[in-house]
Image (cartoon, rainbow, N blue to C red; front, side):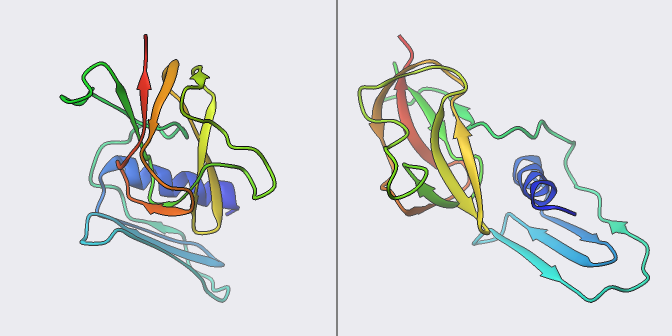
Length: 159
């Protein structure tokens, strides 16, 4: 199982609402737990054994597993703005590396598919893409800050 497959599994579990998923293969054992007081994801490498793969089925129905930020309904106080929320838990970064420019700034116009930020989860850097077009009104999270699943990240004016 490669890093991309693990990353997709984490995204799937986060979006599905499943409380726990276990995956055991010859050389890897993965347990992903969500919905507790603090969401946790655990990956363990174990010595190779001769077991058959066992997969615990998610409780919720499967959902789409793409790396885009969920869009919430407009907030009452900012009714004309769209809130872009974090699709995963991790650390929020506004630029791809310390020596590179920011992905977006307040006042910048964005289009669907533009990368807004990166969220690092378990040493995996996930580019968060916009699902809407518009203008960045406010950035709600500081650079290098931890974020939770479904935490508001950006306010976008779609007009």
